[in-house]
Amino acid sequence: MSPSRRVTVERNRLRFAAAHMATFGGDMEPLHGHNYDITVEIEGDLTKDDWVWDFGGLKKIVREIADALDHHFLLQRNSQLLTISELPDAWRIEFRDRTYTFPKQDVIALPIENTTAERISEWISGRIQQGLAEAGATNIRRLSVGVEEMPGQAGWYTVDL
Image 1 (cartoon, one colour):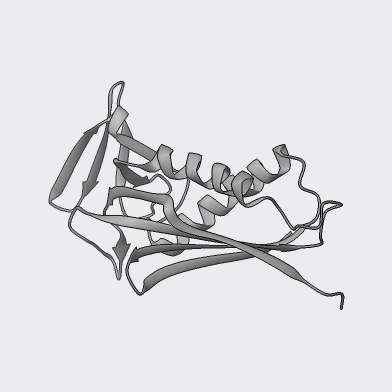
Image 2 (cartoon, one colour):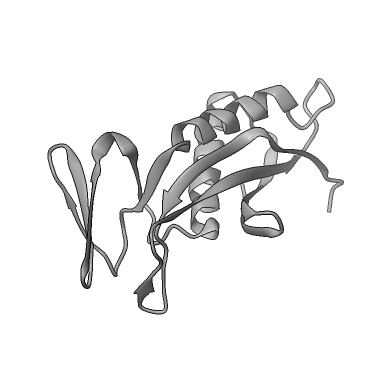
């Protein structure tokens, strides 16, 4: 196995505030929000400039993702428990005796089954992979993304590339 090098970026401007209602055990949490912090670690071979990837470039990719999520309701578009209707100018979410209607401009409809920190980190990972590919990164072998809902409580997603 060849040597491995890693870089990590976290917190500072890599955060967003968002609302959600995760489902678990056949039930749904009440509507609430978090001040999320994102941590990203990439592992790979050194480039010709002797770095895995430029910190500034990686932070820019992650910051753009965080900014897009900031101050929105995160909708688990692929939920198996919620009845979700896309209206011309709103999203309607129904669960048992509760119905919520959110203006479209306040919603990020994520193609995930649940808005847990683990699933959000997986979605963010896909966006980071896309950003790194667009920036020409061919040396990255592993990507880990952590989404912290509150201090000491984070969900992680790690993928080998």
